[in-house]
Length: 128
Image: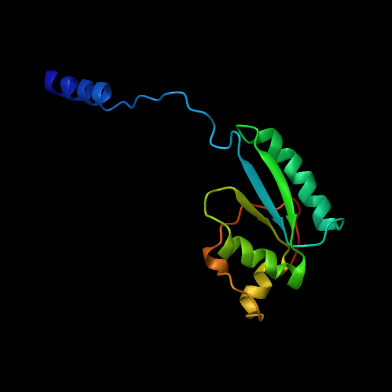
């Protein structure tokens, strides 16, 4: 019984990690939201609505900018996010449903692998 107690005490005492206060990762950084549509359209309005919420809920109060890449029905933006952006957590793609359809149907110009993309969510719902 004493052995079990000593082993438990050892793991609780020495196994506990010390957590120090850290600056939030996004503090003093800029997040780029790459929009796969033209400025002023409905996708732009949805993206702006979501980014205003992101500003409130991401620790560190990062600057968030929207970059519009409307060419190719959003393919240019998707290709940029997949191949051109650094994987540092500072680039988010805002794409339409065609993102998946273009990849599945093998549309010319698709340079991204939809299976390796990380899906965060959507501000609306759609039936396909």
